[in-house]
Amino acid sequence: MYDHNSIFARILRGEISSKKVLETEYTLAFYDAFPKASVHILVIPKKPYVTFHDFISGAESEEILDYYKVIDTIVRSQGLNDTGYKLLVNSGEGGGQEIPHFHTHVMG
Ligand code: AMP
Image 1 (cartoon, rainbow, N blue to C red):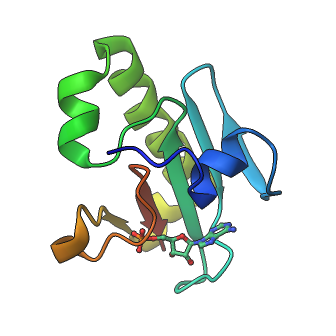
Image 2 (image 1 turned 180 degrees about the vertical axis):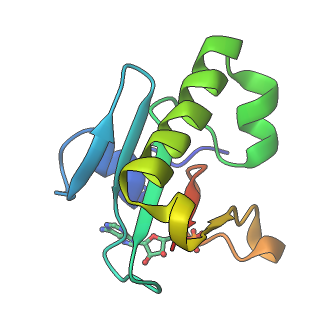
């Protein structure tokens, strides 16, 4: 079940500040507050999905395309295509997901 009081839900409502990297109609990207790599950016859909499955099965194609285009734009604009990078999704409790709003870690 989606938690409307999670940290990312509150960031989306502007109740908690974040260091924004990129924003589109469907997607928001911001710096991870506790970076585990030189570049550590989180990319989230604006609509309420908990897991990867929720996102893929619930979102419109336009929204999904926008999401992955934002990730690609970040990869290129941060110079990560040259250095190499990781895209990480933790999904569900057993997958180590701490914040129950679907997100991808972009780490380089
Ligand atoms: P996960 O374990 O995949 O759910 O990742 C959650 C991520 O959110 C972690 O890497 C945290 O460092 C990050 N995080 C927690 N609180 C904030 C915050 N207020 N702003 C930005 N990132 C956060």
